[in-house]
Length: 201
Image 1 (cartoon, rainbow, N blue to C red):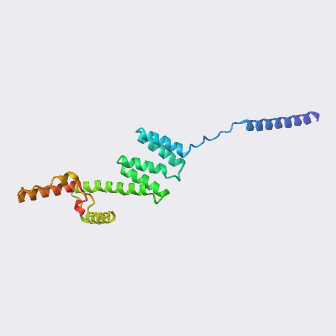
Image 2 (image 1 turned 180 degrees about the vertical axis):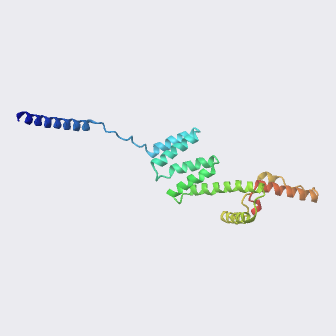
Image 3 (image 1 turned 60 degrees about the vertical axis):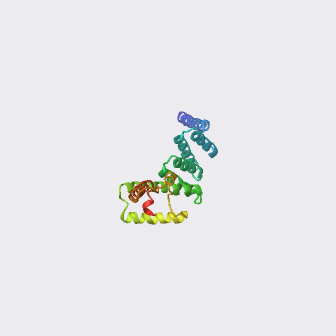
């Protein structure tokens, strides 16, 4: 009987010792802390430094990281939109500028980037269609309506002004009427390729 009682006491003692050891191990386990998030200013400075040294793609990557870290801030998207616009990557410039407008619908720079990038993409597309002689039917009508809206919005009678070289070389007065007609037609052909909006006036 004494043997059974002493074994019970020993079992309880061992159980208590195991619990105490487990608790002490939990208390001494190192606490892993997440690294502190860099400030927006630090992230923007690093991206600006990369951009200034000509590493535009690295800068865009850093701005995107800043946009993820601080999703409510429009500054990273503004920088990306400006960089893409300057590189002639108008589609991406528009997408990034739209991200700016989600955060600030009244941002003038973002609206300007969208408007000008859209016009440049439209000009390219219209120029390609003009070369392919595919600017006809409903596409032509809709393009004319959009050109009219643009002229009214800009307060201009001509969307794309003539290039200075064209203005500096007027048709000479001593040319024959037939030559004038041929030059006029050639000039009109040149204008249609240089100015895709020419057919939409």
